[in-house]
Image (cartoon, rainbow, N blue to C red; front, side, top):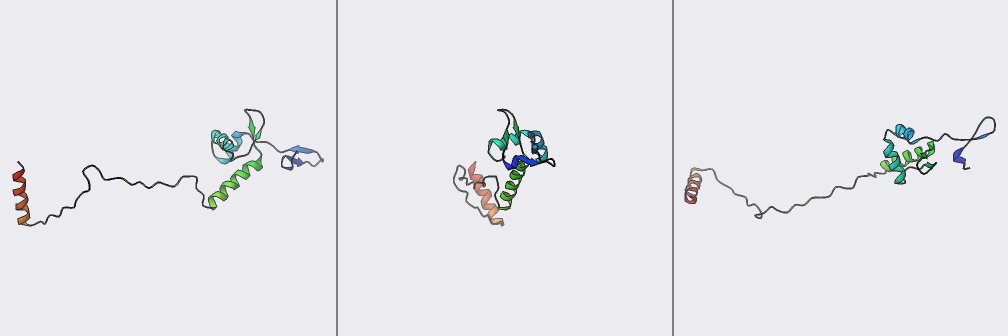
Length: 119
């Protein structure tokens, strides 16, 4: 047995530390049971595999995960990927040209004259 799993009792007997169920770990960390199992599959959270379907956790494993996450946040690590810059091409018809219209009586008259030719 490893030292992590042993605790000495007052009688001198060696006992195991209490193993937590996934539900207990989820409640401690404020996440769902599915997320606990996902963390185990990703190798982020250690566990004791009791059977092929049952996992148990020691308090040390839970605290190790919490400390690792706390260090990662302090180091500036963020789990999200950096945002990609979006560059869009101009729409059909090419670039837009700026049109400056002087607001005088002559410009309005020339505009009306030009529009009358369109029909």
